[in-house]
Length: 331
Image (cartoon, rainbow, N blue to C red; front, side):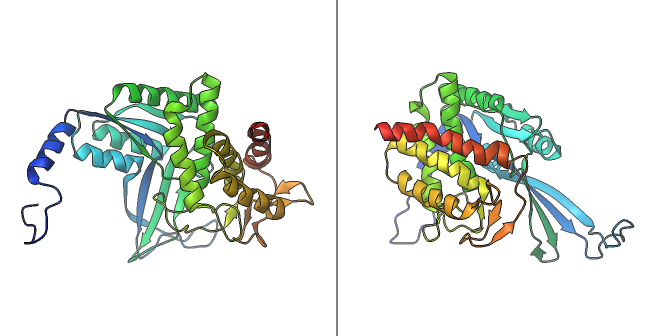
């Protein structure tokens, strides 16, 4: 700041930075979002022993370490600024990754009362990164088939309400795929309805989640919504089409139309609706293809039924679409 070249204006004066940092020390902060863990497994070049069961040579982990990801990384950066206090609001699973994540938060002096541990149907979101010599092997992701319970959603919402009332700042972080964006948005709306709460205080967050998916997740060429992309926007890096993202986007974009108006959510809904009924539905059996190529012409996975499909995403999206459709027709 004091070494700005001649002729260039220093954008932030040193005394202003000191003033801001001093004020941060008097602010209580809450971070709500997708708490994740990055797991780094450094593979030993010699490998492991030969497996007696498979006759294949195992990979040996020579060194391992775990670092903050997603909202936990936001918390770690926030802790470096030394605010008056930090509280974390999110969900982890009852697993080794969740326990390590909470241990790290405790080490940062964070209030983890708002970190809900869900027992069953929820794995802590973790990115397993196997690193061999100078390259990273294909990543192993945990927690991408999660189903948050109604009790979990109610608990998160309760802690979030308290944070909004008691903290000077609340930071939101989104990390998981675009389908989770819209799923979060409409599940939050649903939770508010069940609890008899007004949606107005949360509409900014809901709209941001929906807009992120519309801007970065919808395939304008072939229709449908992509599997995954960077959490801060930009081009998707997994352009295949998985069933559950389509299901959640159908509901979320309809809710967006009702809450915020037709544009741009109706156009997004049409693109996903058309892709689902033209490509995703396997009409021979009445269920949805689990994973398709980007254009929808070729199934990648062919299993028709499992616990996340028939009794959860696909059927639920059809049922949950009825109410917003009726509202739109009445408008």
